[in-house]
Image (cartoon, rainbow, N blue to C red; front, side, top):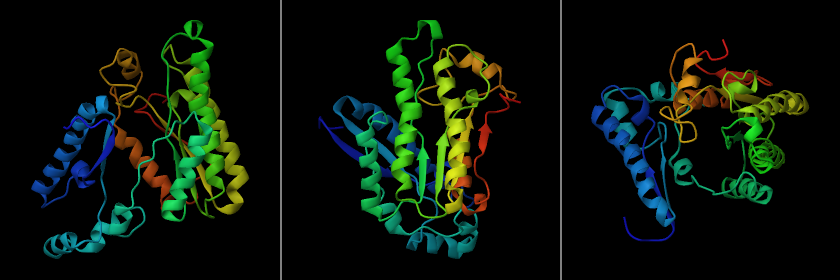
Length: 284
């Protein structure tokens, strides 16, 4: 990688690199490799301020898909596995944008919403995914650390949602990533974090009432322990978290993405005000 001091690299992968596809083993393997390359390149580029990300499209209406579908599957079979029940269009991938914004900075959050609308002409789904935790006992937690957690986990959700509501059409979707500890705290060291996720839970229920007349659904996905950079499965806090799950393991980000995709789609139009727990049985 060059010594460039800033910039962005975007690789195009495929969802088939994650879920597989019969009759396309080489293609699936190559796309899975792209995601691994992206992660490694991101680590190398970080000291230089170079951001490296991957876009993983689902089935897109292209000449390659037409050739593959003609010899193996009908296009309808591909579309049937997509929540929107249609193939994507190339321009939907070409116009993907990445916006860097601090969730604790209200001006940056609002600007990100406005830039998204200006780029695509509309906003259909908002996913409040930013979050943070500072694992330590409540007695040891400083006021500054509490403020930081509150600013991102609660205030950031409020600001982004309020800004998005000005643009969401009737039938839009608001999805927030909460946490299973917003309902029950099994491990020590998460008191401020759990309190913010409990607040998100009630926020979801209250807002669902306010915007229901517009057909906008508001839901909260509550993950249990998920293997991420913030909470790695091999981290210092992993053992007690894994121990309280019924499945005795960490979940994967794809487990959460699948739930988000469902409630963002048309099949979930009657689901609102729900707190949907995906926690491997932690709260069972």
